[in-house]
Image (tube, rainbow, N blue to C red; front, side, top):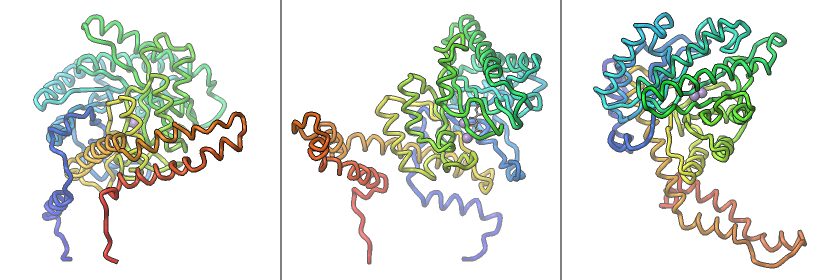
Length: 412
Ligand code: GCO
Ligand code: MN
Ligand code: MN
């Protein structure tokens, strides 16, 4: 192939994207409660060992491009859009007004707001640091985010307390730090009750998000299960207002099964929001687009969620790779992530309707009907042949995922 000069590269990407086919129309994409984060689209590719590869973009660009793709909801950290020195001041009000206009101009809604308590130097010792002025500041920030959320019409607030922990041992007393962290959440909930009442709006759903390995070395609330324990610990004044925003990859990172983590959240009635992405077990937070690594597991996850009536929000919390250009973020990264999600969601519907899967599952539950009493060996013998269905079910799921149930022939 001939070299592709820089001025022809975008056209090549566009042509091959079209050739890929399988894209949904923006109107179809808008039917799903799919949310696009400001920070994901504006991510420049930087990391500890990585210089940025993309130029900065602001919320106006992100909102406009999400609208074109058909992503109906937008969400943001406070600090993604408001400089630290403007928080709670006139500058914030002006920016919030600009966001409102931008959302209205492009027909998007703000679904969620989240407080950044990890990036700024003030949070070097975390949001629940020993110094009372740091904790007061954290309380101000979460209360302020609640205000912004109500101004923008959000339904959800997310908290990722990844900076709640330490690098070196000894200085932190865990029970005390967790009490202080609860104080911040209590401040947010109390503020929310006040503002919601004043504005005649429902209170926000406050969702905790766990990540096992970053940015501290040891993390006090590393998993969704740890957070369920924390919510039920008695430290929260309004535990009914606090639930979970699990992230698929964050549960996979520690070696857990995301589907089982989601099941435990569902049973606790706390699955309120879901960050969708992909990656690998026991690695850092690679935040790859949904379905690019574990499509079979994703299909299974969506079967679980669909069968329990969880319809979103599904938050596209992935990071477009550093190899993707600014143009590629909106031409390839976001539309393809949305479309893989919708395809897997629709496929999960097919799985639920599939006659073979249904009959196999029902047969497993029906058992043999042979009375075997307390004779363990006789029970095992009576069910032996049925248990082969476990593997048959797995095969059928892969068939559906790969389209093999529709047949495939090879010219060998
Ligand atoms: C991550 C985290 C964040 C949070 C966000 C919301 O992967 O770094 O998941 O993206 O979702 O900070 O609080
Ligand atoms: Mn992540
Ligand atoms: Mn996340």
